Length: 275
Image (cartoon, one colour):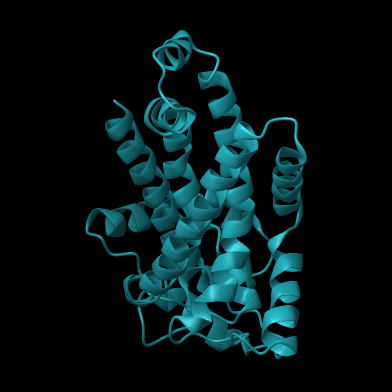
């Protein structure tokens, strides 16, 4: 589908503001086999995939798509892992606290924060965090990629929305579990509320949460392109946006396949763990 859509869009990868001579465009298209029929281009690309060759980049002439993924994917992975841990560290405790304090001010506050986290898009939250913690307070750098301090703001921006999702799911799961018969039995045995919640309720309440952590992790890794653009992080998401702008077909296809593989792998791991 992606391959077809790219070729249906008007224009080509060598269209620039300053138009290239038609002879040069013809030579480039011949070099990259873009002058061949659509079906033949597609078969050539499938042949490359079989040999794990994702082709050359039209804009980064010195690098192949394999090189771009190999060099930029670890940056996005670091950012995604940090954001994933932030989402879990914020979401699960908030959900548990809201469930234990159901229909109290604490519950309402936690759920209000969760709704706020889901409602704020990265394109709004990122600049806001940059303004507060970067420009006003000067606690963290606001752009580029370096040490741990450079990861805080983008990871917080990326992980906030998913922490809200995890919090709401944890709360709902906890409220369902505490109504089960075995929880009433544990209380009837005289166990403390802390033991009942931590050793009986929480363990079972986290099962539904665990099933969504895999897809959430995959979405965080593959959905960091806006955050990488905002914070000027040279990750694979930023290269994907640039490749779409430049109509760099091989890079678009290669990164799309890479993202798809991550999503499939994450879901497979969850299914194996859950089973």
